[in-house]
Every structure is written in C-alpha cells, then in structure tokens.
Length: 428
Image 1: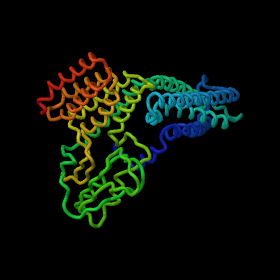
Image 2 (image 1 turned 90 degrees about the vertical axis):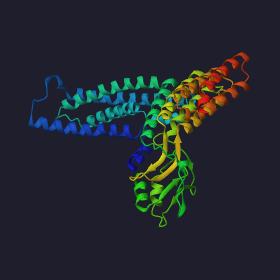
Image 3 (image 1 turned 90 degrees about the horizontal axis):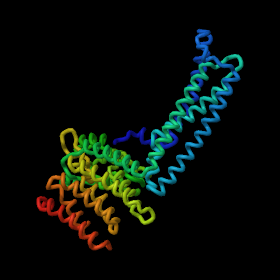
Image 4 (image 1 turned 135 degrees about the horizontal axis):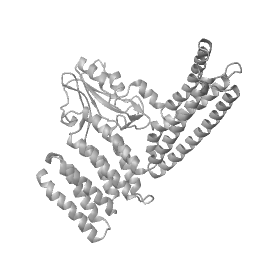
C-alpha cells in the first residue's frame, strides 16, 4: 500500500489520538449546531417539537450532568481495559503487537463516541438557559448516550476476542493475505538478480537519516527516470534499517543528478516498522508469536502450530501466483526502479528456519512443520520445490539430533522421508 505524505503524517498521530480526538471534538460542534438549529426552529416554527420531547430546564440540566459524568467514567474504564490488554499482549503475545491494538478501529470509535458524548453534554449544559428549553438538544444528547452504550458493548466484545492469541494470529494472517494480494498486483515475472546492470555513468545515493524503510514508492521516480533514461537500483527493501550516510541506491545514467530528490522521496523512513509497505512485517509477527509460544516461559505449542498453519496458507498463495516484487517497469515496459526481489522463497526463509530451530525438542511442533511444508510442496510446481525440500531435509536433521525418544524420532523422520520420496525426485 502506497501512502500519500498527508496520510503518512496523520499516521504518526494514530492510535488513540487522531480518530478518537476528531470524533470527540465533533461533539462540541454538534452541540453548538443543534443549539442554533433549535433556536431557529423555536423562533420560526413555534410548537414544532412533539410533546414527548418537551422537558423542563432543570430536567435538561440533570440529564446533561448525568450524561457527562457517566460518559467520563466509562471513558476511564475503557482506557483501563485498553491498558490491561496492552500489558497482557506485551507479555503473552508479543510487544510489537501493541501497535495493532492501538490501530483497532472499534476501540478508537468507542473511545471517540464516549468523548463526543462528554463534550456534547458539557457544551449543552453550558448553553442551557432559563429562557430557552433545550428540547431538541436533550433528544440528540439521549441519542448520543444510546450510541455510546452500544459501542461500549461492541468494544467489550471486541476486546474479549482480541485477547485470544489464536484470534489475533488469525487477524494477522488476514492482514498478511491482503499484503500478499497487494504485492501480487504489482508483481512482474522479472527477478532483480536477473537484471544486467546498465552501462554508463553511475553513482550512489546515501540515506539522509536513520530509520526503517517503510516502502518503495516508485510512482514519480519512474516517470522522472524514464524522462532522463536512467535506472535506479535500491540496495535496501521495506523493513530494512538504514543509518544516515549509508548508501541505499545506485543510479545509472543520470549525470546531472536530477533524480536524487526523487530517489530519497521514494524511500520514506520511519522510526518503527509498519505493515503498510513491508510484506515481511506480518510474517515476522507470526514467527514472533510462534517463537514466544515455544519459549520455556510460555510453553504454548498449539499457538505456535496455529501460526505455522496460517503462514503455510499465505505462502502457498504467494508461491502459486509466483510472487516476485521489487522490479518496477515504466510505461514502455523497461525496468527503471529495482529493489531486492521478494518472492515466496524469501518469505519462506524468513519464517520456517527460525521456527524449525526453536522446535528441535518439541515433537508436536516438528510434526506441524512437516505437515505444513508437505502441504505446500504438494501444491507447488516442480520448479518451486527446491527451498521447501531443503528445509524438510534440515528438519529431519534437527529431529535426528534432538533428545526425543527413538520411536518418536523414527516416526517423524519416516514422515519426512515419505514426503521427500514423493516430491524431491521430480524437482531434481
């Protein structure tokens, strides 16, 4: 996903500030607007308000007072629940998942609605006068309270699901599926390693600062490179960390250095990794959950197995569609912007070797890895099996070197050998 500069700026203020703050401030504007609308209707259309909406001034003030106090109390409770969930997530699931909890739209809207109800009630209470009964204002305030209660119930239901590790793994897997689909839409059948470096003038462009590469955004750079006949080879890809002065790209055939600004602009840097342009981010999150689940302090093998299953599904899709991102073509089909290619094999190498090493003494996890790789091998084309076959052989070595019972090792190695006999020969 390519972000505009405006959206990237707003994202810095995301979480429980941007969206909840905007919704909360809307309560003030609505209160003022409803007050003036009611004043107009009272002067121009006296008696238009139905009898069941008519209230006394004292009743209106009491309603606004109770609404403001209740909404603020509920807001405090919501933030307390959020902090509790953050603490549980950091210790039991993984600290990098806190950003996902902060970006949850249901939580943001629930917090914003409570803030809007509070500010609406406070502003309406201040505007209430003895000479003007705020019938319509009270009715809108009651609607605010009903909506806030419903959103609060939705928030509690949402949080009860988010604290489930399996549910969170499923949410991350769905995000990974969307990222893979987005990357497939930009895929080209060309690998960056297959491209021949152009002849002519070349120079390096260095990073202007420190940070994580958020994405490669080649839009304007492609046009500028095509206009001057240049080619840009990036040495980094989304998710990599760079420091100020580090070479990040090599530019060919641009002696006037007209592309330097575009090269830097197409490589936005952030202080933390995000999933928007980094295909490896969600893969790393699932691997992190699996490794933490396999640690002696947690010892939750079935959560790790769930992560393996989810990863196998996403990587199978990437392999079936022959994911190959990193080469960007101009309107004439010429490669103008190139970064290290991300394929199903590179994502597989990011995920399965760390989990295989962590599962050395865990028979259940080793079996889950064998099953997952066997599933992917079975649906892969013969020319796509080499990396997975090699990983199966390494898994057999890990099992053989483990301290599991001989009978357990024999059974698991037998499963691996059956898979190798069935699929390794055609690949060779």
